[in-house]
Length: 355
Image 1 (spheres, one colour):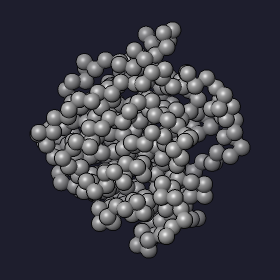
Image 2 (tube, rainbow, N blue to C red; image 1 turned 120 degrees about the vertical axis):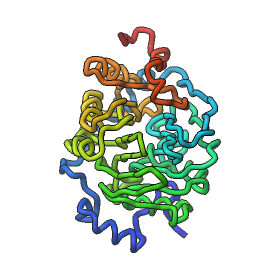
Image 3 (tube, helix red, strand yellow; image 1 turned 135 degrees about the vertical axis):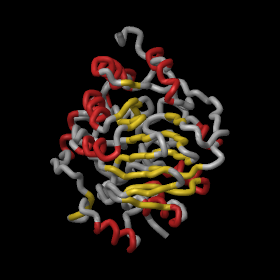
């Protein structure tokens, strides 16, 4: 019996898994590394944020009322039809070429190993994924609590046919009861075909770990989803780096890019992107439509909850970038993008200027 609480996950121990991990060119000195080396954040620097997090005005960092969720029925009668739904933060549901996909779904009230503390969600979780008749594939970008949710895995794993994850994350899933035969672990640039859809784990610049001492024992990445006619890109969490252009050269252009767009701070500038960098990353991967994710659900930084999307709205206009801020839980089709309102403006403080 393990003494480690289940929610923490587990270090990679399986011999075959360790063997594959050690073959990765990005694994050395006992952990995974980014393509571009950068100095880690000194722990003492993090304490500079504590006054803002503990004593700052949370009314500016959190909405003053629950954000709206569209609990509409998703039409899944035609499996060939391309659609997607944003479920808050970085959680997504996608249907493409008869393959149903969920990405980084997080159900829990808090993104924390503890029920009584940690960032608490701003809105209920859109629950339409529990109505899906089938889930062909669950994609994970990395194992941080706001992207890999123990509670959701326990609730839904028996209904998922395949789990596509970066190297090492399969150990968590097995520890939580997932059938090892369902788990497919990839290194950067490795591919997996499921039905008519090709999945590629592509680079990202980030970190991993679910508890102190477990840093970078598992890998992280972004994802290319390539169907017969449509192509999508999901950034996962990442700082800005030159490999965005390489991804665009290899697999672009993309019909839709879902890019991490909030929780930025100068202390972790190599791990998350600012709005300006989000626009540039979207252009480098050769995206046609930008859908910002990783915002509006959890308080993970000291900026205002709405700051990223206000800036993205202005930047997109200035840079001639087609952008969409979908309603939570809504079923979206690319052909309907032009009529999408800025729904979040109704939830801003009255004196906030957005024009």
